[in-house]
Length: 319
Image (tube, rainbow, N blue to C red; front, side):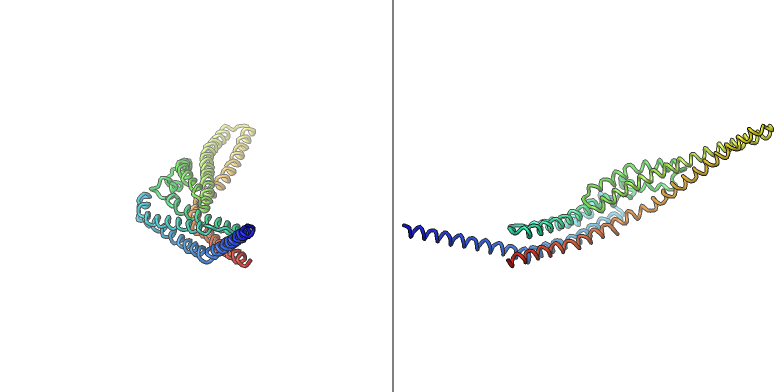
């Protein structure tokens, strides 16, 4: 009986050792698969994303420039949008496969988590860029509900007060449409929306200041004409010197107010014109500068995160 018990214990120990060795081998195989296959599959899936983005943006803009309405452009670029969405889904699936069945050290888990964070940031960025592009692209189109082209009233207004009123009317739906980009999930759009909102608010402020200055100037001219009449009447009546001096002093005070008003007008008008002139650059820089820089950031960070995962896997396999 004792011999039988000992034999069973030995057999059990042998089984435990075999299971431990099997688990260790399986863990090693998984790490090698992550390093040699899954990360490569992820890179291949990720590399398909940007061409899909470019294809969609080009297709949508081509349709809009045909010209076509937003709804028609959405329909005409549906294939490219579907292709992008499929590429994004495939990339996300490939990212999740990197973690599948991975039971490893804290170092490997941390590296994989950082890899996941950078990739998810990149995927979210690209999805936001594509999904909100129709809203961004249509901001200044005359046939779009945003109506931001109405900010540039130019010579449509008879005077500066009318210009200010037309601007305020156009600014409300325009700012609302632009602010929707803050929920796009794309940093470039979100930054643009915040800056754009401030720029439009500045336009409204300077338009009000110039309109008020123009109205004040017209009133000053009327008062100045009254002073000229009063002075002529005083001289005709041979009025006392005190009365003439009082009129002259009031006229000098009025001239001082006119100069101050002109200074305020010039200040506001210069900034209003700068704001209008700078608006096209603000829009263009979303893609020519901001998106380009953001993509370069991910292109620099992601390979580092991939290499880190490979390095910590190599270190663990050596142990």
